[in-house]
Length: 290
Image (cartoon, rainbow, N blue to C red):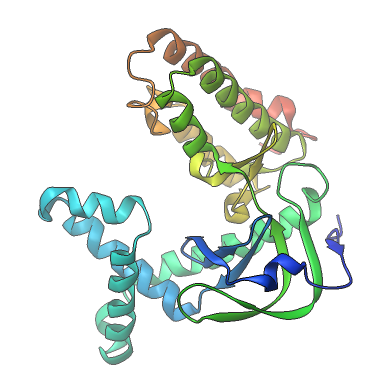
């Protein structure tokens, strides 16, 4: 299927140039800035990506040696401290001989990330535009926008619809307010959204709650880098998923759902009935080759 083109508009939305955009979040390959309704992205350079891979490798190895749970904190969420460490790491790899830090593992992780990211974006353009499963993207003539932090400004020619919240934050907020019926509603919508993707012949191998956002009553995929239509990748992921004893804990919901044994039981039962090889094959557009 050919790529579907985003909606083109005559000029950049005024809110993107009115004020300096807030730094909203970041991932291994991009930094995201936002206005009220739109987000723009700054792609990271290859050196930045490699620096993050090297840093995360070191932190994972030394996580338990750092006091006060600092290692786990740095790995669990972006922070100014992590950005500072990434800058130091990037400076170090610029002067330290490549043979010291560019290990086979770092090379493999970098190549795998770039390959999956490009393939996922291509699949999303071809299959998910106008489905409601991803935020809308618009294009416009190149425009300069001001952003918080470095580099201070960007030239952009596209923006993506801003979500109201990420799925994990919404679930945590509802649980904190004791709204467990709504928690269950959003968890069921999460599974429904995954199945809607399967019916289009796409599967995300990176389907954690932080990777989904909320717009109205819809759940949308935020990062398409984990998308694949290759049955070998899908089968390998499902082989692992089918061995998960407590799906809610795997999704980081053990503390959120503490004291809700019936909800945990219902969600885990539905997750197991949905996330398995037979279920995915039954919803795939064409039966995959075995």
